[in-house]
Image (tube, rainbow, N blue to C red):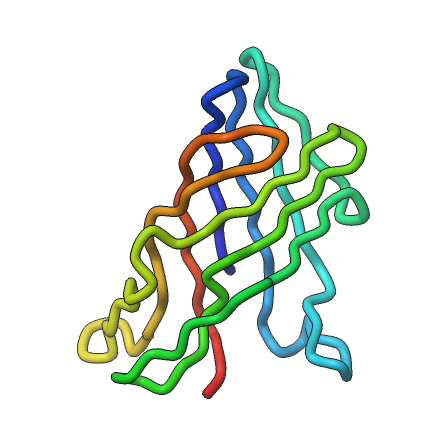
Length: 130
């Protein structure tokens, strides 16, 4: 699973989005089939329906070390909440190679947030292909 957490400067909300991308949840075209998330605003948390979350990668970065390709610029739309954001990696080279301990390679790092709200965030991604 992957996680995107956004803290807005303009509103008191946190968005946590967990996008499941194991192979069983991919369609024949390779697109992810399921998102789940929660939106917290004014100390009230609500579960977002899968159909209400639109997450689109806009730009990628390729690791010279592993050859893996990671999205580093995302468009996030929550139409029912009038939220339209882009998140961009602060440092593209945020790959963590943990093959010696957990047999995993993943990308995690801080992102800037712009759009209908501004702020900062954090993204963790794994299970990307060469």
